[in-house]
Amino acid sequence: MGWVPAGEGYEVALLDGRVAARATSGRAAGRRLKALPKALRDHPEVDRLRRLGEWLGRHAAACVAQVDAWMVSSLPVPTGLLGRVWADEAWRAALRDAVVVGDGPEDVGFLRDASGDGELRVVDLDGETVRLSAETVTLPHPVLLPELEELREFAAELGISQGIEQIHRATWRKPEEPAGSTRTEVSEFAGGKFPSRFALAARASSLGYRVSGGYATCQVRDGVESVEASVWIGDPYWDEQVATGGLSWRDREGRSLRVGDVGPVAWSEGMRMASALWAGRVIEEGKGA
Image 1: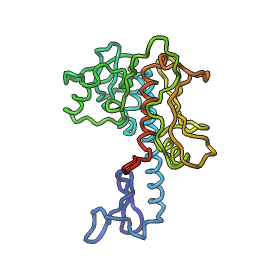
Image 2 (image 1 turned 90 degrees about the vertical axis):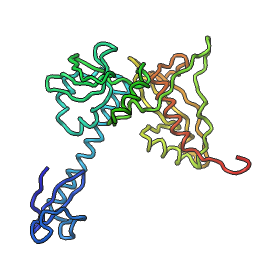
Image 3 (image 1 turned 60 degrees about the horizontal axis):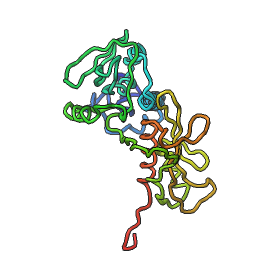
Image 4 (image 1 turned 180 degrees about the vertical axis):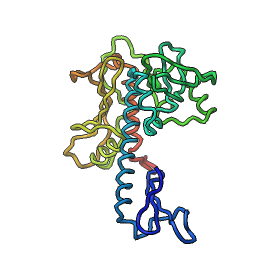
């Protein structure tokens, strides 16, 4: 976006999401000013650019959230759709360098470009730029990537920075469950103390998790199944010290799942949520800690 006149002797523009100003006359003509002059703070053009910047910020966040949802659910995404949204800078920033998989397990690489007709250009693990012309691709959850460590090393070599948290996302591999086990809860991250239920609920919300009743929850699509992982965070009306409870999973009908029946993505995302809540606990210090 270019510079537009705003008042006598000034121009304004939206740069890096903020309104900037420059003088059009005098010694400072053409130079960007360190701050908006007082005379411009309530100017209609400045207000218009501020509102545009806020909208662009919300749009960028929505693009990242959508691409993240595709990745967490490992849903097939039409390549034609990727080609249509690629021209949008916010979509491009969210999608660029995401790991995509085409028709076969060998059709994998970091997404670098998408044409209007849906042809994708990716950089594979050999460092070659190849074209994918599949009708759909997936942006796999990292726990499903067999070559995750190689992808991480290769990304470090290339200096790749993803718009979504994919290859560097914290993941947990589900251990083998003993035959015949009927347990429905994991207590690895239970017992993390917080000064109040409000503090624990606020942490869950700030991390992007839904707080419903006495639980922090996250919805995960694992294969064709929709699963909800939940961690007990205390009675909503209790305003004294609380501790994180166990982690459990339910199917779309609300039935508890046995740990052995939880899929790899639902397990990893549930453990990721429980770990993130646990990390904010009160750390006791001193001799008796």
